[in-house]
Length: 374
Image (cartoon, rainbow, N blue to C red; front, top):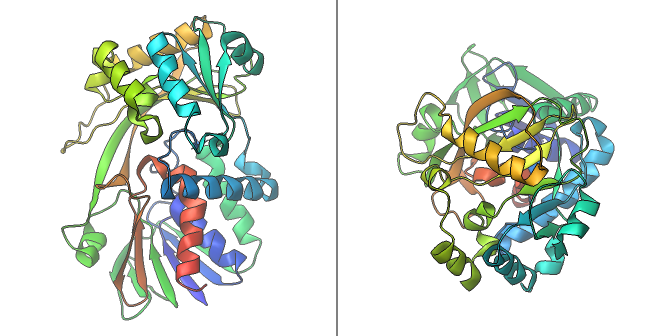
């Protein structure tokens, strides 16, 4: 079988990975010279902790298993089973964590409520003020800016993989064939359109204007090296407000009696923080849903994140080296893990995982491969 994959972000690359792993030939086409979208502009988190129970959690746990196996084969991914800590500062925040630990699926996530002393034993860089912490053992991380490149290099070793960068697919020609903007036709047995947040042009033509997927914009930043290990990922209680796993009466009480900071509420923020291989910290993020998106970044969210991080670290944040905005595609029904649609004979559109893309992409691609009988 010959599979044409359009898009070289993490969703497209994982489809290429599964196809090659099952003995098939793959041609992967990317309109940029290399992927430059949301797959690179994220935390690199394999984030199990906040996922909704049921299908979403099942997908995330399977993806976590796949990431670990791929990481052993491709060290350049920078896979690490670091887990995450959410420091808690008030009784209302702790009550939400207690409700999470009481969930029937808490053990599958690796939830445990820790004292501040126990949390600092896991992550000594957290010298700031908090009274307890929620630990999620199943969370992990990879290096987002280099993961696709490392996967591509491994795929090239198979002899069954071709990468074509700097080509935009303009047209579906017949069954399972596409024409790019160089005029070349690429013929296969299946075409996977994994175009990320690019939802216009060919995608709109094939899927129609009522595609149940929206675009979401975020702001993030990265610092100079911290100068010491941050041994776990770190979140704050605003992640309780954002992720479905934490919905409970305790969360209702938190929202009622401990309102979110006005800046965080305005920008629909949470704190997530992960240390990169060079020692810097990737920190975010905001969520903007209304179109048209702003073309510039605003400073107040960065100032808010800096204050929160410094209260947990108990020290000034290193100099901010990079600030950026990114856009990802999210199903409008946010309970859906991904939008998978056959748009022509032999052509499937895979889009809309939202902030779950980095976490869930290996399992999303595995499901596609199983459904298509690869």
